[in-house]
Length: 159
Image (cartoon, rainbow, N blue to C red; front, side, top):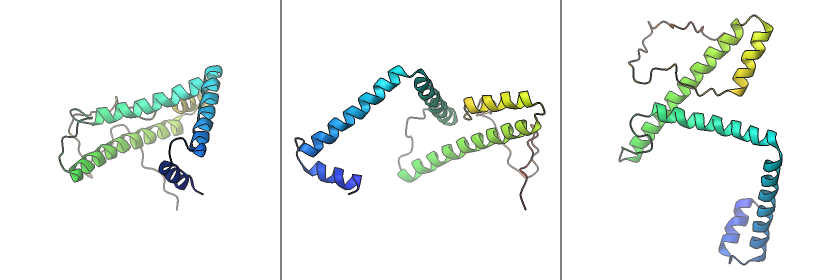
């Protein structure tokens, strides 16, 4: 039986059903074991905090990309809301892609093994969702004549 079938069936029963009570108690055991492990294990707490910081950085990027109040839906139609959300997602992905291209180029240009390892460590422990180097309220030229002022080279295509 799939989990969705089980829960659909359990929802049709009373809350006092023995299987429902047993699954609820089992869930409490798993949650309690995790909480105890979280309290005891410093490395687990640090790893969770690190991931939460990356998620928070991503949320901050969403707020930076949004114009006005990002939590307020200013469009009445669902279609317009989807377009606005898609545009935000596209801009976030473009910033993230640019960051990856820039960091990849920096890794390729690094000649010293120690600097390479230090940069690799910083990338692994940092967040790719940074935007302080992006002009969020400027004009952008996407014409074909545009030259990259940073010097990011096009990716090497494999034949």
